[in-house]
Length: 301
Image (cartoon, rainbow, N blue to C red; front, side, top):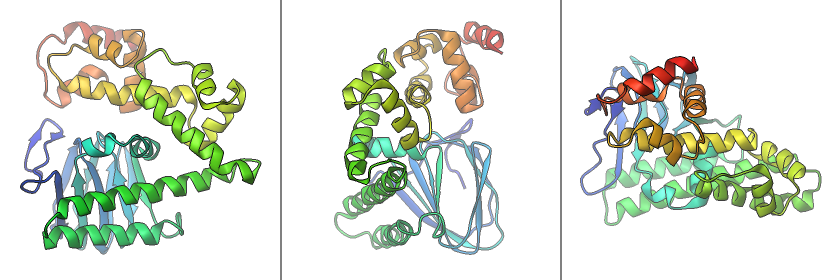
């Protein structure tokens, strides 16, 4: 049961004196379309389980692990049988660690880990999620710290696996670690400066590559172009502004680095499958002063 749902925005009830929530769920209950600020990890312990994230259906078998990134609209259909871990954690601490924030961006909106897809990373990730469950249920001294330590360790495993998988595409094996570190640093730089007027040439220079070499390497590493990655970071920042009813849609666009309201609306709709006005209404965060942005939304198609 989702206890606090405002529109489709869930406010998570954390365990007392923590920013964590974990429960072992065996109920046949449909969790309707919703999103929340915490990251969520699902892991079936018995039988299978489905999750729909941004219109993509993920089928989880026993032991599979699904990471649902913050702000992702998702739906969990009811299953008559089975037991699964549902874990949620506030990301404020994680976002203060640049490398972890970058990894969350790289795996967004959701990331399914199975033994077949990630044979090297899976055993450690599966061990860590079970250890987090035991630590949470044991409720010992410094339990929250121990769980966050394991959660960060999970992202280290994911990040290193990502770097290894994508590093194989680099021509010279001797350059893999160097390139991985430079590209991770470039992602961190984009996260920190995404609201500014960043260019491909500027970030390439910051990373120590020529424009064309960086463009190719960055796409290999992130699976998206530099400008798409930059737009994703700006949209993520804009979401936080849109939740605040005192910040207008136009102000949210400019604060997030967009040079025009039309380009912001177009990119937001492409990324989130709804306009900024619809996003704000869906989450029931603001009911006034939306008429002007609505007109612009209609004009942008």
